[in-house]
Image (cartoon, rainbow, N blue to C red; front, side, top):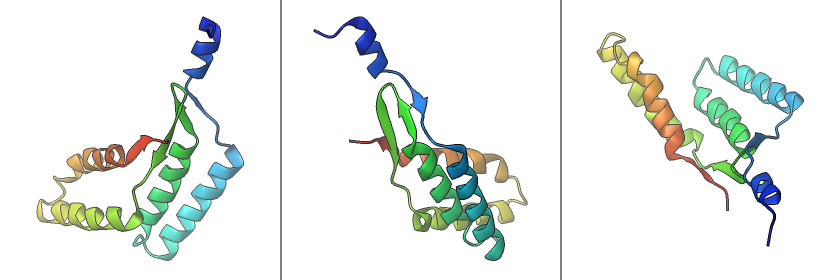
Length: 110
């Protein structure tokens, strides 16, 4: 039988990503976004968020992210359309819509 200390160590939450990798992903994402005038922002966003979830462990279980840039791009166009036709009012809900999309595609890895 496992000791209580060993059991609690398996349930710890932590992040094991490195600073150099994070900076590299952010620079790449920034360059891609700027060079494409923002069109490829969904790709940049999903790349960075996927890296973050891949390096996150919650109560001993690693997270994974299965969202794609193509999926986000469709939503992104729709969300920005709503922002334009509502004269920016929908932008208050844009953050919540993005958080819901991220949560929908974030799971525990097998």
